[in-house]
Length: 298
Image 1 (cartoon, rainbow, N blue to C red):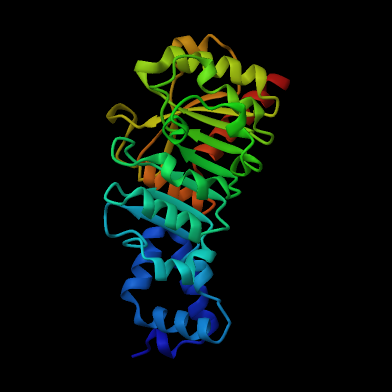
Image 2 (cartoon, rainbow, N blue to C red):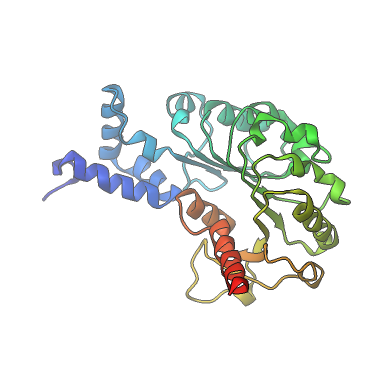
């Protein structure tokens, strides 16, 4: 019986690449279950031919469930492999702010960062310093918890925002008006903005959208994002699928084609799809806006 060990290395490498890139969950299974994968990783790492590790460890997901990769924050593990990471999702409320800081310090080349933690349990400012030194292009976070107040111009000048094009603000419940997010007009490369669709803050969200469209000169997309309700789901949908929903009247009245309302079937799955270059909320929103603008031109 032929096993993976009998196959040419080049073929095994392609199989591993395809499997690891398919999802973070699959990468975790490969690394934990396949002895052959571990042998390949260690062998080529020791021979200074890191062909597999940069693929397996490109995306790190710290989630409450153990099926995701890696299972826990480990300083030694991060020292060896953190440099490979380009995508990071941290949503493990059993971890501490020191754990988050350690991961950020160990992964200097992150380009896509999502930190979804309960601010009542995790002190966000404790990991601001290592986060501020990174250069992500995509960031998903609770800005109010990170800066313990309004997002101001001085925050927008931090290194972490110099190359940021895509910003997802996870909560606007603590915002009272546009001044709480006014600093985003100083983000030099911001083109995509996502805000949560929350009934309790929809009036403030409308004000933020109006001002963002006016003051953010490069802004091409604004997404109102929420989790899909039972009324928008059907039996054919799978995790990560994004669907368009109707805009609330207060925001529809703004009348700008760059505003899109979307709902997804699982936030983790949607983020994972995007981290692998798939069709996430940003891609769907771009398609919708492109269709609207092309129709208007005709």
